[in-house]
Image 1 (cartoon, rainbow, N blue to C red):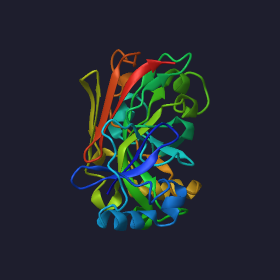
Image 2 (cartoon, rainbow, N blue to C red):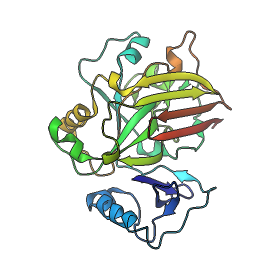
Image 3 (cartoon, helix red, strand yellow):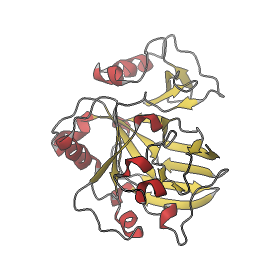
Image 4 (cartoon, one colour):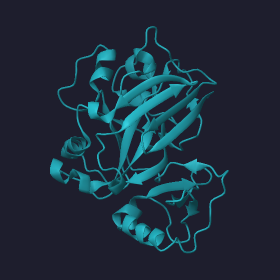
Length: 283
């Protein structure tokens, strides 16, 4: 299934994209795709509802805004430098263990919303990533059991203000967490329709120019290991989002670096998971 949410920011309604491409509102049956939905086995109920022809569901107008495919999560956990060539383009040692950091959940936004340059920012960068959403509470999970805790997968962009991240001391979080720095979507594809998350292509274009072109088979830590590793240190709750890292080709890694400016158009995609698109605007 493809889960979508539509409508104004912070007032989105749940919906689905049917097998024939129609966008159907699901709000008559489901309140939202949030922690309570996943914890209560909502995916199974949604599958039954769609299999029954989406009774009571109206078609969503074509011009409706799409929000992120799940409600704002309790946390967004990210894996840094998880592609070998990305670590090398920064000239940094390859991590022996997965490098974890957090993005503020207030950065969460829709797949086509503008990305807003925060005040004082000068080095805005893009990072296309495969993200997954947790479906059931996960704590101290073995790798073999990790897939059972995943609800589905989505395209994600980890926008980063490199000056805040690299030049102001402390942890990376401050360069990762501005409002609009975590667009996701346009849909969440359920786990049963992604047979191998290690067999997906990722790409980014800036103003039509190809920048990133990678493959999830190049990840240093795969999805199952990421789930198992993160849950050694924290509990992942239903609806939480995990971003798995980015391939090489980011603006900071170019010679000279090419950071984003107002008016730029950033397009990111993951095979089977659609594309997200942001226009860069000044805050």
